[in-house]
Length: 300
Ligand SMILES: [Ca+2]
Ligand SMILES: [Ca+2]
Ligand SMILES: [Ca+2]
Image 1 (tube, protein in one colour):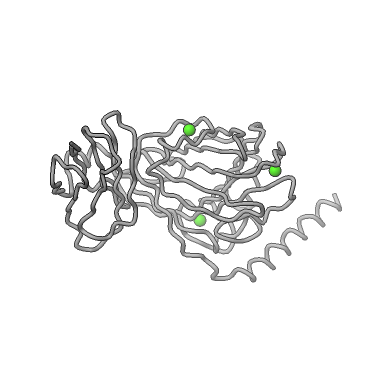
Image 2: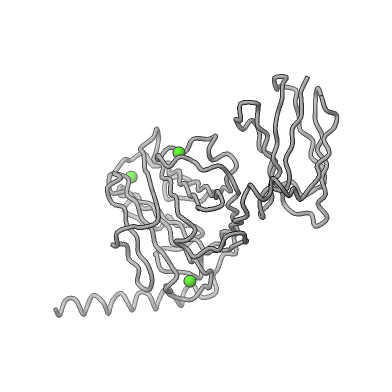
């Protein structure tokens, strides 16, 4: 009993110290979760299923971890590619989500911590103040796989788990961490930091929950496509008075993504077709609120 009391006291002291260190240290980084078809949660980050994802890379102690974000109108999908080939079964990955994005200097009742180990047998969830993982997970699905040179984790969360209303844009706080058991370090965090309990350094994740069906019937944007049919290049013109950031995704007739053009803030984008087979192609223009328009063009 005496030992237990001492332990609690030292944890409290540690938190107080770190809270002082990280006061007002919110990174302000933003990553968008774009609308997409649902990826398959099998622990393999298939490039086609995550090709339109919002992507962020962050340094690990041994390499760089890549995180992907998507949503399908009812669930949030997050994948982590962790290039750690030391292959220790206790390696784990996880993240904290501040669902209400209400910051704070310690964990709040809306906050979650999720954790998954590389062996695939240690799925955990923590919730609310303290939130060290130990609860049985509910409302989410996760799969993990060892792949060449590292490992991959895919998560699916129902929006209801985070209290996200439908047909809205939503901002959450996010804090990712990985543990490499060979290195024995949990300093591999993004945006930055060295423990699980720091809402002030969380990044923003912005999620639009507008459904694709609504967008298809009410296209926000008439997109001009010319020349069409085309040979060497196709130009797309659209209205973008506020110079919002757009992403253009081009699919072939089989529905495979053949190109993704990011960071379009102009009202025009030119697509090079030189090395592309002739035939029918589809495109979708997205911004952070969802699908801004879509159409098709032909390459001769
Ligand atoms: Ca997959
Ligand atoms: Ca390892
Ligand atoms: Ca919170």
